[in-house]
Amino acid sequence: MTSDSFSIGIDFGGTNLRLAAYTPAAGFLETIQMPTRLQAGRDAVVADMCAGIRKLLDRYSSKLALKGIAIGSPGPIELPEGRLRNLPNLPGFDGLELRAAVEQSVGTPVVVENDANVAALAECVAGKGKTLGIDTLCFLTLGTGVGGGIIFHGKIWDGLNGMAGEVGHINIWPDGVACGCGARGCLEPLASATGVRRRAKEMIAAGKSPALAALEKSNPEFTPRDVAGLASAGDRDAQTIFDEVGLALGRGLAALVNTLNLPLYVVGGGLSSSWNLFSPALFGELRYRSYVFRMTDPEKSDAARGTAAKTYVTLTELGPEAGLLGACILPFTVARNGA
Image 1 (cartoon, helix red, strand yellow):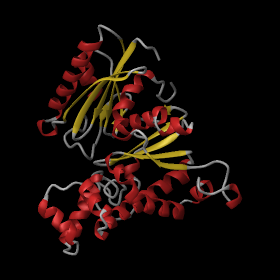
Image 2 (image 1 turned 120 degrees about the horizontal axis):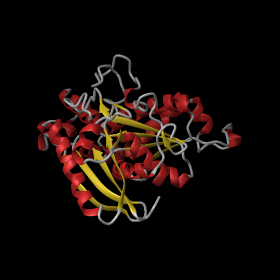
Image 3 (image 1 turned 30 degrees about the vertical axis):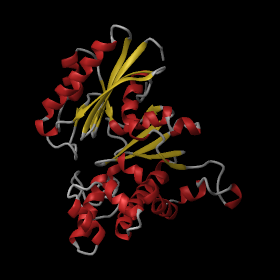
Image 4 (image 1 turned 60 degrees about the vertical axis):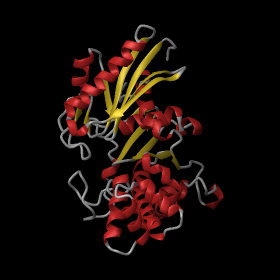
């Protein structure tokens, strides 16, 4: 990394579009945030993105050399083409040639990567991975949906064509609630912000959750954070929703731990602010479902039939900045398969 270079990172979310100019020495030089105008269509979103990039280029390219531009986007994404495919939470964006469209507009090469992958990279380089001295991890991001990113020895694992890490579509309940991917019973509709709101509305409709019903009456657009507030205040129905989130996550993580045997799994995204509400159920289910975790549980000593190697399952250290920071770090990091 050189001190006279800067990057531009873009965090393309379903609600907000965030951009930043960044140097390794100074961190974020400037950030820009605007609503993601999904209703205006994908051309409008790309135009907003490019306008933000040009603004940052105009401001910093005369002082610093551009190291690169990277976009963290919801997936699935075909890589390295940067083509968006069958996005459950971005209707109308299927087939968008995001990389080509932005490159044509700004006249500079651009890297497109899955948003959960760049968040995972940031967590590895500057978050929990750095704190624990671990360069291999799986990151789960709980937002509108459930995303995942896998880092092997400091490099993003993209898989065959960029679609590795789609952990939101691990099956948790066969024939369960419908998922935007077309299947039923996926982790995504059970452990996402969307899922918390859906479950709350189901309980309200059943007529047996007075506190949730009062919340909806006072605020029809209530958020998962509002439901978490009720749970923290002791409402049993609201807490049940987060117990169900933890149960689903525990099952999903058990599948990942048993399959991958990585040293670190990090949970981030907006819903992770309710970690204290869902983590007890998560760990209870994880210990039940994964014999690998039971043997490598950090709370179990070698003498208690554990192993010297430990599996850490923790809350994000970077919080909501992980996605934007990861996009900024990516141009400075050899993070691609085979690179």
